[in-house]
Image (cartoon, one colour):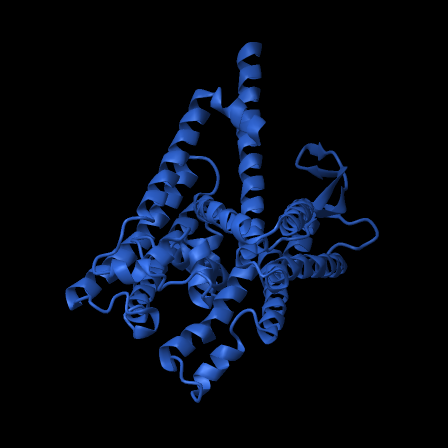
Length: 428
C-alpha cells in the first residue's frame, strides 16, 4: 500500500486526487468536534455518554466519537447507509425501480436522487429521536437546559450534518480516490484506535497485549483471505458465426466471491438488535416491571441470547443480500445467449441450479466467518476484562481491512492505466 501511494504521489493528477481526498476527510474530522447548540458541556464532560453503553458504544465507533461528543456530525453517515441498503433491496422488489436500474446512468441518477430524499427523511426522524433521547434524565440531562429554539436548531443541525457528510462522500467518489462513504467510515473507526490502544496499555498487562496483538494479526489475515477468496466456475464459449464473422471460442471463468455481501449483514443485524434497547430506553427507562424494559434487558449486549440472535441474523442477512446481488437464473440465461456453458452442465436451468448450489455452499462459509468475526470481540472482552478489545477486532477491522484493500486496488488500477497511456505516447 505504501509503495502504491508513493508511486501515485509522483503522478500530478493522482497527487491532486489524494490531496483532495485527504482534505475532505480532514474537514469531516473537524466537523466531528464542532458542538451542537444548547448542550450542557459540564454534564457531557462528566461522562454522561459512557462509550460502554449498548447504544452509545455502537454509534460512537461508526461516527468517530462524534456521537459521544454530541457534535454536528453526531448521526454520522448511518442514515445514508440505511437508505442506500433499503433502496437497493426495494430495487429488486419494486418493478418501477427495476426498470430504472435497467436504464443505465439515467435511471441510476434517479435512484440516487430517491436515496438522497430517503436519507433526508431518515436523518430528520433520527434527529428528533436523538434530541428527545438525550433530553431525558437517564443520561444526566445533557440537553435538559435546552430551550425549544435550541431543540429546533439541534434537529436542523443534525439533519444538515448528515446531508453534508453524504455530499462529502460523493465528492470523494467523483473527484478523489476510492469510495467516499467507505473512506469516511474507515476514518471514523481509525480515529478511535489511539484512545483504545492507550486504554489497553493502561489497563492490560504484557501477556494480554501480546495475546491481543496475535489475535489482531490473525483476524486481519483471515479477513484478507476471505475477502479475496473466490470460487472460479469454468466457462467455455463455443465457436459461432455472427453475421459474416466467425467468433473464436475460448475458456474463461466466472468468479464467485466467498464474502459477496461484505459487511452489510453485520450493519443490518446491529441495527435490528439495537432497536429493542432503544425502545426500552424510550418506553420503560429503568423500570424492571415494564415488559419493554425486560425485553430490552434480555437483548442487551453482550448477553448470551443477544450473541445467538446476532450470529443468526448475520447468517440470514448474508444469504439474503447475496441473493439480491447474484441471480443464478439471470447469469445462466446470459451465458446461454452469449454461447457460453459450464462444462458438464446443459445451458439454462441445469446451469442455474449448479450455480445456485455452489453459491449456497460458499456463502455458508462466508456467513459463518462474518458471524465469528462479529461475535469474537464480545467473547474476548469478559475473558480479558478489557472493554477496549472490542475496538481491536470484529466489525471495525472487517470494515477497515476491506476498504483498504479496495482503495489499494483502485489506486493500482489508476497507476496501471496511466502506465499504459505512457506506453502509447512513447509508441506514437
